[in-house]
Length: 152
Length: 83
Image (cartoon, rainbow over all chains, first blue to last red; front, side, top):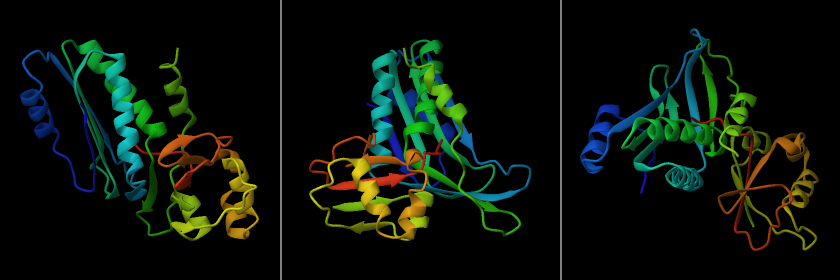
């Protein structure tokens, strides 16, 4: 059963790793973490504002987590996605995957990120450092391409 | 029927959500989009490139040819950019 959280507050990576190691039992041999950060785009952006679809965001993250659990021998999963205003350097998303061996944990973490980016209902709006109206971040074709490799 | 909008779809339409009575002629998502486009320039603007718009029925992704059935809530939004 994955730990899935959508929250406004910052997350604590070390605390999440410690929690997973403590709760996951003694057969976990590998915990892979991925952290997605807000970038400034070389000083252009003051912040990103993340909008989400409450209820669906959590449901979709749980569905993606179940798919990962079906595909790999996973002992524990954590997915935390933030919403609201996030400044450069702060975390936006955190994924943790635990398994007996590293291969499954690495692959599951990457799978989760590829699906989160294309299926979890979140949208980023830019806040510009120069005060001008920012635009909505556009979806990248490369994210759909990344998804393709998980389909047989 | 409750309709909800996100991101620039919400901004272009001008409301985050609304209740609408739908005529019986609307069977699938694509019919609903056509119906909405007929309700004002703001809708026409939001759906000007309708094929890129993603749709969720009762918080599950669906294609544009999905039947609306007994949906309680239908959401329209651009491709997602989380992560």
